[in-house]
Length: 194
Image (cartoon, rainbow, N blue to C red):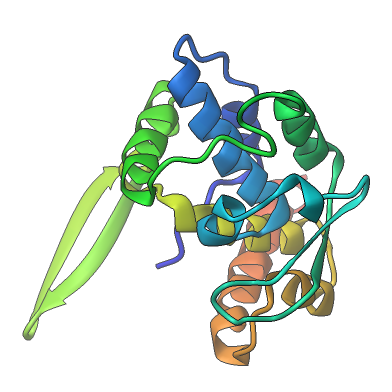
């Protein structure tokens, strides 16, 4: 099961006005990862020296890929600009455990609550559980959001894989299938209803 924010959900979260500075900062870091495809571990290690006007250049912690260049878009640039010349530059960072707790809170406040059914197996027994989407949002869903929305928006698979560093074809194919299914549903809901 790939949990991700649709483009509408992502933009609702990105534009949501939080009263809490803590939630606003967590939202900003989460959205930054949705716009760049970075893992939280890589965002946590970002330094101002990693950032140029149009890209981030870092060593990816998980794969140890040196000098990985990730292009910035207008949304990721706006988030970085918000924290420029502050004590948080380039981004405010907290522990992953607190981050995962707070991002659920952010998504709940922003009313990202589509019912999602998750299935797990205990031995031979199948257990289905339906929960609001905000309960399932974690730091890693930001990366999944980037991949899925990039494909839906038409970014070439090879480019997305290059940005995210996905090595295994089979793990990446799941995202492609989701993007294709979404495109098919959209076509059915628009042109095929005429």
